[in-house]
Length: 362
Image 1 (cartoon, rainbow, N blue to C red):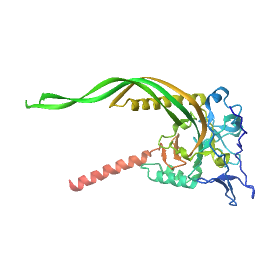
Image 2 (image 1 turned 45 degrees about the horizontal axis):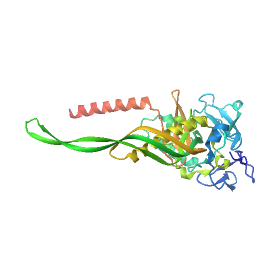
Image 3 (image 1 turned 30 degrees about the vertical axis):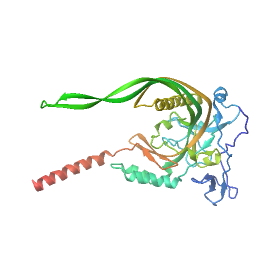
Image 4 (image 1 turned 60 degrees about the horizontal axis):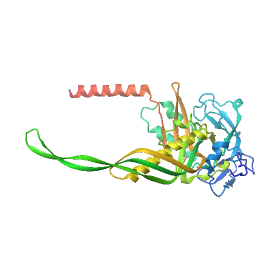
């Protein structure tokens, strides 16, 4: 594994004019000061680094691309997150519980190789959330009031592993080709009729498929990111930028909890499914059966990437409800509570209206 200079992971960026904290400005390549307007360009490396997988599986990055980061773990839900010293709110982005500063500890982590910077700023995410809540039927009034508080919506970078490999797979299976035969039958009136029935002719098939698999994405936070709706967890990875900690300024960063080895095992299953799709395409015909698949992966590389979401947390009748907004494209999704009384009075009102109409036109 090649030695490289350690990357800067200092997240607290200070304005050289007034000393205030600098935050990343979504949709740009600069960090800015909210007080004096000073901006600084974010300088990144020329390319995104792909790390050799097998070397990391053996040494876990102890020699390069690995540093310590200060982490806070939520005592309520267990989410492991980095919070900057100047970050205003010390509350968990997932459950809203207070983060205890005594829980601050240092952890070793593999540095991100790339980051997809926020493309939507907090004001825009707040407007998206408010519009979505306003369109919900039977939502509690407290939820609508919560939508008016932008402080309840937090920006978070989620950790993911991505894996690349040169894939080769030998397969055995069967090819099915459809053909039709004419069958004679009598209908309910006794008349003779004919119909076409489909049959499948199976033949043995074997071969080899090969190709490059790029960016197999595996969620790297077992407890937290598993709850994010699939509709939100879709990002355009062509917008990835080489990692710079300046992109993280002003946001919370969650640390991965899925070990690299486990992420690799999940990626192997994903790649096996890809190889089977390739084999079916190679077999051709109308139907395919793959009975044996011998998978080989070479030149494997990986990277740790950070992807953006906004999270809004709401507590109703003792339960936590999380709402997620994709920080790149604005897709919103979440589980919402229902107001019992709104539903009750709607049903009662409908019954009264039905009774009144029945009385008037009876």
